[in-house]
Image (cartoon, rainbow, N blue to C red):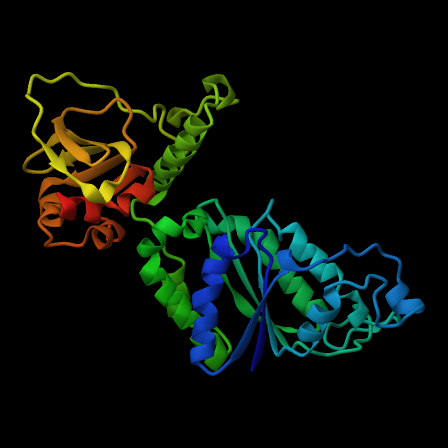
Length: 375
């Protein structure tokens, strides 16, 4: 089976789309498929101008002599085409739409009845290939509902182009997949995507049981945890660019104004709490490099309390109370975090199992194992 994967993300290999592509195609290759990826962003690709030169003056040949010539040749010889696109305003990316528009030379101008859809008009095909198509798409919102128009569009394209629509792999809440520093959190998900690729190559579809696993949340804690993570990320980004407070919100984001889960916490920074407890000794954490950050712990269970680590350079100071501006906040039961600190439990696996939840900079979470080992 010849598989052509079209990456319609402008960010190419730094994208969530590509991070879904990679294990999926590796799974297909493990099942014996021959795969190739075209990063549409890399193509010199002019938009279709609707001149119909490819129908009337030079049948089958576009007026634009650009990289679409070679890409269309590969497209026309593929058994299966995978359309990979991030969800942009509830549809495909602009560069993917340009690619789709430029496939027009594959058809002839004559009007005939559609060979499979009764009562619908069709253009004769110069080339019948590909036989099948599959859709891969990530989006930033946490619900699958946002993909409805995108899926409907590609299903309609497959129906009108006389292709078999094999299925789709959709991933809401996918922005963290594009972060290089967070890749270790998604090992289990990528294993599932690999299995999906194998199943499509071998069976022509993703089994319902596997699709149900693929549709589970990437992060434990539901929408609230996802909203808190997003709020922490965008707050940190705006802080970095010194965005004035009055420019950050056009309307108040208050939980009581929403009909379900709060969109964002009313205050993304913890207030300082004075404490009479003496500051604990510092410890060396060479793994932290030149980092300056506060890591806040809100501990529940048998030994509840609020503590934070102040990391500056290669020194980490343990303090009781809450930080004024923590870079990362960890909500954890005491027994769980003791087990992680003692090396009895893997911190990343515990997070994915919902043993604790976090807010703020997830890339810092990925460094905690090294920091604790150094200490």
